[in-house]
Length: 400
Image 1 (spheres, helix red, strand yellow):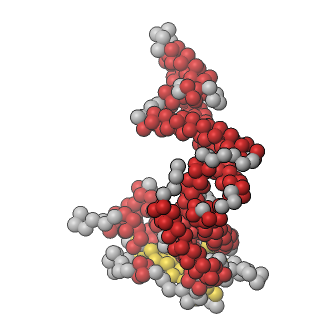
Image 2 (cartoon, rainbow, N blue to C red; image 1 turned 135 degrees about the vertical axis):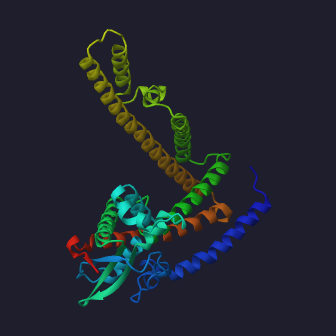
Image 3 (cartoon, rainbow, N blue to C red; image 1 turned 90 degrees about the vertical axis):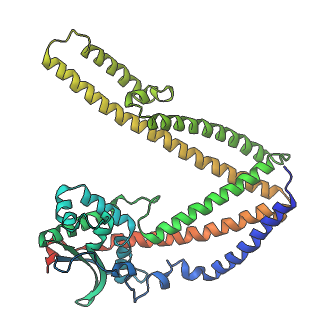
């Protein structure tokens, strides 16, 4: 494929623009890699405007308060307690926490009756999350010479206000325990992770373009021969894996039963699915054969069928999870092979430094490195903040 002049002009323009951006980012990198401290962790932290909005609740209402504290760190580079608590305030005021808390309240008839129902009316339609958010406020304050994060809950009765405090503590603990690298809950870490993923996708796209263009050129080294062969095989296996997972998803979308999924040719020979299918068939045939006249025996067969169904479902879930993990590993290997092949082409292509795509790729890789550094710094600080949080026990909750 011959690159047109217009394509080269466009890429060169992108390079000039990203060069300017990269220089500016590099100049600010020393301050920003420390988690944008001036911007995010300023000593005089103000509450977000959305926390100061007018309450939806009547004036006559009960309230309760509890606080979060932060452990003092003696090491020089340790986080300040105010910084730690501000990080947790941002999570408590975020969408992830609000959605989880609203779900937790809605899943309990008692909590919903005590916390939400008293404020709902036919004349005024309020979304559950909007109402939930109006039931609590969060602020940093000084107390006995130290900084605390005070959470005030509001409800119709003192008991309900205390219940909301308990649910908030439980929700915060759950999202901290269940947090995964692929779905961070601290907003800044989540933003860096998202931007880094976007940049990596852009880099992979550029590498793919370069690799496809280079595939039509003579192979320069034995290394390239080996890498191309391995990449071709990897992409072939990836395509097969994509077809398999797509077939499974299609059957799921059509409401296929566990047994029907387990009988798919690609799945039936994995794990113990084949044995489960055969045993289930035998049990059902025995159950409906007409030879079973004893009620107790029929109930026992029903119990075994139900138990085997549950085992098959668990086995199927594990098999599919294994296939998905294999797909992710193969994709990572494909990307690594492509990166190695592009690097080999760059090393062996004397004019690579003049090739726009190589230049743009180099810029994007530097940008990704800056983002990766910021993500890792912010993630490390957030992990430290999680470890240093102290929640007062529930006896600290006091009704006004």
